[in-house]
Image 1 (cartoon, rainbow, N blue to C red):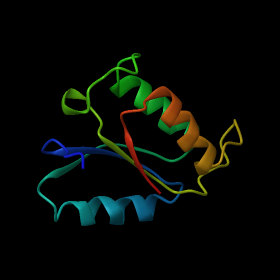
Image 2: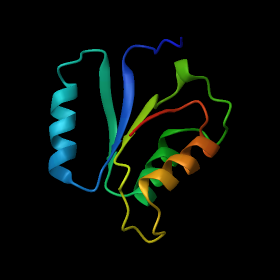
Image 3: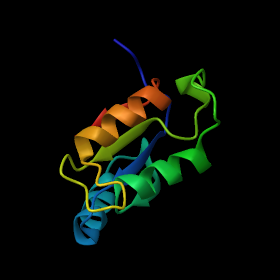
Amino acid sequence: MMSFPTPVKIVLIDRDPIFRIGLKTGLLNFPNSEVVGEAETGEMGLELLSTLLPPTTESPLETSAVHMVIVDPFTGGDATGETGWEFCRTVRSRYPFLRILL
């Protein structure tokens, strides 16, 4: 079983800003987690990840600026028409070391 560094750095991706606020507030109860970014769509999420992470897929999890992405599986409506499921496939291919929670 893989262990995460402390704090676990998380990016939230959900089309509902109230849900993102609630989730971020709930994560404050866990001192070993830190929300490092938020996005409304998959397209915005990929842009955010590209600014936070190096272009290599070899980034070790321990030194990464992001460890986990929490995404709404139905996030969509962006210019690409990508759903949350398709977003996860894209993230997995670009950043295989990231953990994804749907």
